[in-house]
Length: 205
View: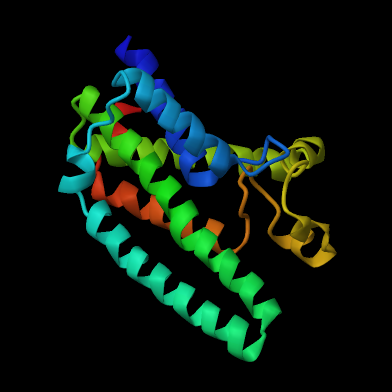
């Protein structure tokens, strides 16, 4: 049972980090709803808040809430005084990214921590899970580079930005919703995590 849970944790971490586009809608919203549903089933309708309170997620989200109120105020001013309707659309997208998407990502992290606690994972083991998720993405990137049909499949529900020949020829390798600068930055962080694990990852392979 623990082995299945470990595999599920790696797969879930992969989905939470990279949001691979295998659905016609953005996976981050679907994964957020599914995660809440899973947590409600596991806890019989009572979601534990201890991890959320003990971690830094609570006070970070309070900061985002302050920024959200600031955006609301200046958006109202812009709309009624300057009539900047185009700017208002941009602000609404920013609010979605700041509150909705960040909230969903915190829920993903929350669930990953809960699973890690159930498996009695130490910090190194949690980092190892993240590294394994990065390895899965690396395999996808190699497959996309070597096999064009695999690449086309990975990009089937990808962003419209990959219709640009310049971007398609340089960045569109992998199985992730974002294959631009954030993708490389994220993979770089995961590569750095492996250094924190010392040699334990190599010994376990």
